[in-house]
Each structure stands twice: as C-alpha cells, then as structure tokens.
Image (cartoon, rainbow over all chains, first blue to last red; front, side, top):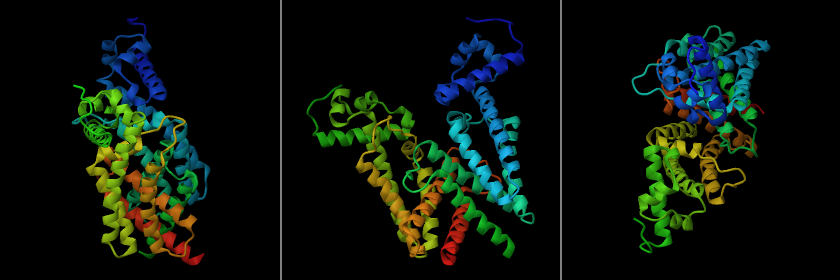
Length: 204
Length: 204
C-alpha cells in the first residue's frame, strides 16, 4: 500500500537502497526492478523516482554500498600485515573471501552496465578509485622508486588476474578441484608476478 | 507450426543446437528457452525433448560448440609461434580476441550452471580438458623437467588470470582506459609470471 510523507527524502533513499540490496542478495541483480523495490518499501514507483533518476541510479547506489564494504575489509587486511609482499597477498585473499561471502552483491557490481551514453557518476568512480589506490599503495611500499605508470599497470594486472580466479571460483568454473584451491592459485600468481616485477625494477 | 518426421533425429539435434547458438549470440544465454528453440526450428517442445534431456543438455551442446571453436583458434595460435614463451602470450591474446569476437557465446560458457546434482557429461569435460591440455603443453615445452602438478598449477593460474582480464574488458569493467590496454595487461601478466616461474624451476 502506498504511503505518503511518512519518511524524509533521505530516509526514503536509504530504505530504497536497502531494499535493492536485499533483492540483489536474494535473487541477484537480474531480480531488481523499480516495481519490486517500491513494493518492498511501501511507496509508489513515482515516489521512488523522485529520489532516483532511474533504476540504474538506484543499482549504482546499492553497488556503491558493496564497494564500500569491500574497501573496509581490504583496508583491514592491508593494515594487518607489516610485510609488504604479504600485504598484497592478504588483499587478494580478502578479495576472494568477500566474493565468496557476498557472492550476488559482488557479482552485481560487475554485471551492471550503464545504458549507452550514461556517464559513471563521480561519487561512484571515487569508490572505484579508492579500491585501486589501496592496491597501488601496497605496491608503492614494495617499490617506492617505480614510476606511477608502472605501479598502475602492475596494480591493474594483479587485480584483474585475482578477479579472474575469484569469478571462476564463485561460478564453479575453475575446473581445478583436483589440482589446487583458489587460494593456491592466488599465492602462485602474487608470488611469481611480484617476484619478477620487483626484479625488473632493480635491474632497470 | 509444428512439423513431424521431416528431419532425422540427428538433423533435428543439429538444428536445435544452431537455434540455441543463434539465440545466445543475439540475446545471451538468459534468452534461451525450450519454447523459443522449438519455435525457431518449427517443432514442438515435446519433440525437442526427445533429443535433449532438458534445456541444460541443449545449452551444454551449444556451449561445447563454442569451446570447440575456441580450441580451434587457440590451436592455430599455439602452432604459429616457435618461441615457447611467445606461444603462451599468443594463446592469451587469442583467448582475448575470441572473447571480444564471440562475447555472448563466450560468456554463456561461464554463465551456465548445471542444476544441483547434475554431473558434467564426459563429452563436455573432454573439451574443457583439451583446452587445458593446450596450455599445459605450451608450458611443458618451456619447462620440460617440471612436475605435472607444477605445470597444472601454473596453467590454471595463468588461464584464470587471463580470463579475469578478458571478462573485465568485455564487460567494460577494467577501469584502465587511461592506463593500459587489455593486451598490455596480458603481456605484463605472462611476462612476469613466466619469468619467475621458470627461474624457480631452475633453482629448485
């Protein structure tokens, strides 16, 4: 049943984001619709659209929440290890654990596409940047003399590789049960990539 | 309109697989249904289910076709390079090009899940194994003395890392436009991973 004026605009926004997050965690991003979110919070779709430009705007807010949760966990992981090489591995392992523990929310971040012509809002991009900054900082501690460009390239390579292991593992498509755990793949990746990347820095 | 007895069982199977593949390439795996496939080939759903156990069986056949196409392209790539390290990079680059050129078919292989309790049929697993064998062979040429276990671990690590770069790139989620192309990430990954992995083999 539709309600009116029971909640402030901010309260309504927050309720709608919570509702979208609940739908994502139960059904995945494909289950989210304005009708379902409106129904869940007891307002009309029209009222919902006074707070969000469109359904993509709402999904971005739900996904931004997931990115903030992920960032918080990675921050703890990065802070927990004093050895900078171990720190990179801890970040990767925490990324995997987050993907396992919040599978549908995590997948929603990567499955959602903005319609053609829509530009990623700054507040969302800022969260993506913060995640990359965390990994770049860990690499900079390891190799303080490397150029910004080199550190960015290494951080993107490592992150997308870690992501590959995580997405195949959560989708049950790693085909490696009898060979190695996803953790063992992460270890092999981080160890070998960093070992050679750091040596290249020393010689060049 | 439903037809009867116009085609042999084999012809009907092949038509249904083609129809499923066409739907996947137009709408993605989410668009495939028994009703749509039956309609496309002009038979009833009942007739379709005389050839396929269920819709998953049909999708697996369509995906197996994609895996065979991918294997054929990777085979050519692996054969085209005499330098074994270059060969691994060529395999990775061809995987990326295939993902770009057959985006929905490629994604369908990884988005499809068998229902709980269903076991992957042998004929499908054989295609997956053939893909891994190709990469394992390339690594074995590089490091003929490494154990089977070590080669399998390295091949799974490399493949899932390459996969991560490809899936983020095709989903427009690499967030690296201003930093590096997906090809540059593949190069960085393969170069550094192999460099350290091969050195580890020499010292141990």
